[in-house]
Image 1 (cartoon, rainbow, N blue to C red):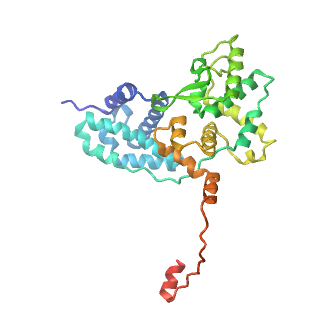
Image 2 (image 1 turned 180 degrees about the horizontal axis):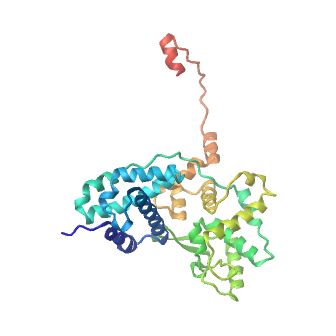
Image 3 (image 1 turned 45 degrees about the vertical axis):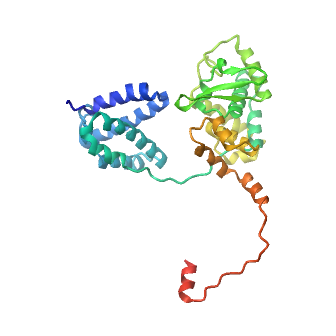
Length: 331
């Protein structure tokens, strides 16, 4: 049996396993590709071997651990980025385990590398008042202003990801007794989200305006091409900056397109929508992801506390009766 080299395994991993078998999104392929470009360049500098000359044996667990340390220490990557790179490497080594059994010892050790624990931060979001200020910021007397306002309103209403918004097409909007949008998210999962009458009217006006300048996407650039992620972030920052004049609390927040998605979830949660429904609304693969909004929602916790009766009994202060017990209590 011919032992496959690293190049053959990587080509199979990207062209067949990820693209054909797993059918992952182009963004996932790009992220995994960047991981291996970083890894191969690192090994080239460390071992003096050209990437095409590397073997699986050159990617043992100590080397992978050293690479992960390099990402954090030399490239200033956060633990979350380090874990994402490790996830890509693990995915590759699962394929190696199947196609190169002779490397099973190396594969087992690499797959055993643990992810680094990170601080779990509360989800950031905008309040209804802050979101209203942002949506009112674009100048709707201009084409760009009307585009930006309709885009942000649709984004907030649907909870769409940035990638879903910049590639949204007119055909994904369905006008009926209830207007809804069809979104295609991670893992090629399709979901349908209803829209407010206000959003429906805004989209109808926008689509009618676009009839004279057809484009492959619903919210194009002036040149008729799809917005980039950077352009979406820029138009959002412009709206936030302008809205900060009428809503001071926005000045202390770093608003991102993904935060608009969080704001959708928090609005649904505070409106009494069940967490399971919110998970379906946002297209979460696991309901555990959606529980982060519950943890961050102080308002819901305060309301829960109000429904909980305070105990009527009194409490006595604990006083240790022994020096050793006093020492332990003071720790």
